[in-house]
Every structure is written in C-alpha cells, then in structure tokens.
Amino acid sequence: MEDECPIQVPRVKLGSQGLEVSRLGFGCGGLSGAYNAPLSHEAGCAVIRDAFNKGITLFDTADVYGSNYDNEIMVGKALKHLPRDKIQLATKFGIGMLEGGGYGVIGTPEYVRKCCEASLKRLEVDYIDIYYQHRVDKTVPIEDTMEELKRLVEEGKVRYVGLSEASPDTIRRAHSVHPITAVQMEYSLWTRNIQEEIIPLCRQLGIGIVAYSPLGRGFFGGKAVVERLPEKSKLVSHPRYKGANLDKNKLLYTRVANLAAKHGCTPPRTSFSMDS
Image (cartoon, rainbow, N blue to C red; front, top):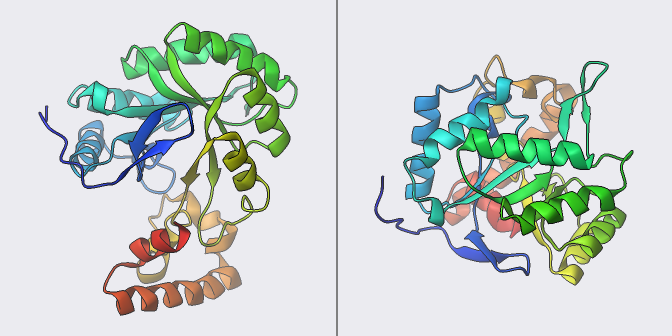
C-alpha cells in the first residue's frame, strides 16, 4: 500500500455538504468492458492504483458494470491496496433484471436497500461515499426512493446521495427529501444539453455536477480518428461513430488537435480546458 498520495490533481468541493474530491475522477466501468475488451482484475487494479498515485481520489463504479458485478468486485480488490480514508468511492443502483426478463429501471425502497447491501459486500467496504440512483424509475415516486437513501445515510452505510440522468423536476423533489450532493450527467464538447436547465438549477441548490464521458466517450482522445476502435467496443454502433456523422466529427477533432498543438498540449487536455 502506498503510504502517501502525492496529489497532482487539484481538489474541489463537490456540492455543498462538505465532500471534497479530486477535480478529475476515474470512471472504472471501462475496465470491465463495453468500450474495449475487459481487463483482468490484476491489470484493472494496477490501473486504479496508478490513477491514485497520480492524484485521483474519486473512483466511480456501478453494480451493472461488467458481467456478474465484475467491476465492483475489481474495485473492491483495488481498494485493499489503497488508504480507504483518502478515497471517495461512488457506485450506483437502479438498473436491474426485471421479473419478466431483461434489464429495466428499478427504484423501489426495497430494491435500494438490497442493492446497497450487496454493493457494500462486493466492494468489501463499510460505507459508500456517493451512492447514485443510476436511472430514475418513473413508476416510483422519487420521494419514496429518497426516503430509503436517507435512511441509509442515517445508518452510516452511505455518506452522500447522488442522481444520474435526472430531470430538473426530479432533482428538486429529491433534494427536498434529502440533500443531493452530486448529479451525474453526460457533458462534453459535443454534449451540451445540461447547460440550459440542469447547471443553473444545481448552482441554485448547491449541487455538484459530475460529468461522465467528458471526452465524448473517448472520441476527443483520438482513438476513433487516429486509431481503429477495438473490435469488441460497443462504440462501433454509436451514431456519432458511424458513417457521415463520424466524418463530420473528425473535422471537429482536427480543430481540437490543431488547437492543442498550438498550445503545446494534448487534445484530451484541450477538451477538458474548454469545458472547465
């Protein structure tokens, strides 16, 4: 275990409830597949440790990432080699197997508690720093879901509550039951739709925003432009990575790459700077 964390990434307050995190977080889902072939647990844990040693302390997973809860199990193994008190661990619930078969969104209080207990066991931790509702179940009042999350906070199993891909009305109603610390939404140079309502609302309520896919699901990292996508990547079927859309987006990437070269940095760094 590393005795010290040489912070190189700036730290920020996330929301207004006192949580402090590294400004740059690490989304662990890709370690278990989706955008590329899954890594072994040994390799995945090495990546997580390396990210921590570079100053990242906010790590994000979910019970639905990877087959058979693979990602939470992998993250749990990695945490054994890191100082838990210096890590801000986020995971999610809300996407599960429906009784009739197939995946769907579930937000009943019973399901919330069941998922939390299971995630704690897989991650082998006593508490979750940020527990997100992955998607909102429109058949269950958000107030009912939040009441159970509030109880989990009171029991010390969860420290802060978050929502992912929630509407402004849902955010307001949820926040009235228990403070929402963070809202996780897709946000990047080519996904800007949260700017009109979500960002102003979160500023008003003191809620932090955690942007997922800030590099356009890797596009502004250059993989789709200067290299081929991995054969097992689900991105090959993503509309922005196909046909005429890809050709148009390559022009956008070229502009970002040229700007990066002008300033002596990489396209991903330029993309982050333009979104900050």
